[in-house]
Length: 123
Image (cartoon, rainbow, N blue to C red; front, side):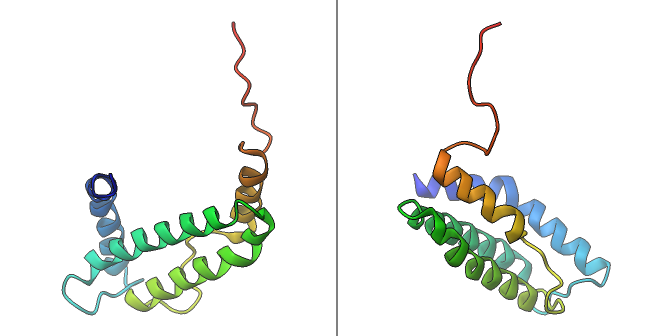
């Protein structure tokens, strides 16, 4: 199953991520210093995505831990991408922790999207 999911991610997102990297390079915002380094940005994204989901899963028993465990994951991914793309420190914003963490906490504690009406009503 994991192989199929990774293949689907590559088909759906890799070319789009590479286009974004190329646009950043064309605008002199980012710089890819090595051949095919842009392809590794996608691999870094999937590693971040996996690590983020694993960290969130660890927080299921104690949702408060999301506030201490997830920010270093986000910060490490940001740092990695900034280095790989030769961006100034702090230039890249992947996820806004002040927005994401409360949402993730609510999802862990209530199982819903915080205040969204999940009840199905018949018309």
